[in-house]
Length: 116
Image (cartoon, rainbow, N blue to C red; front, side, top):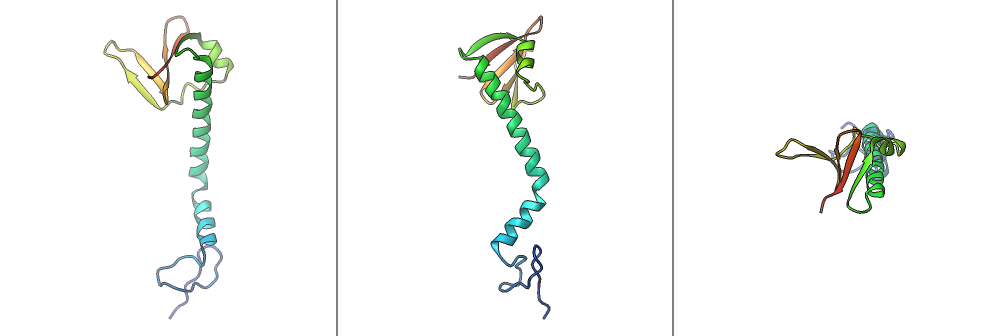
């Protein structure tokens, strides 16, 4: 019978015939290496969403505030990242980062709102 070797360290595996790793440490190390790229993407995206949320929360302390685009740009707000979109019957488009939202108005102004 052929001895199976650990996918991470190459040591012989003892136990069940369908085991792929010699220990939990090797299994975790292997899976962390395999998922590293996707985990980095998710972590970086979540960090940027968190930053956008912080900016909106900071600028919209009253629950409904009007700001100019330059204010958002000065805080390095990333307009490409949001968690949801809400379209009204009138055709207005609100972009949300969790419960903090914004609506683009005329003349480079934005209405910041908080979902209740």
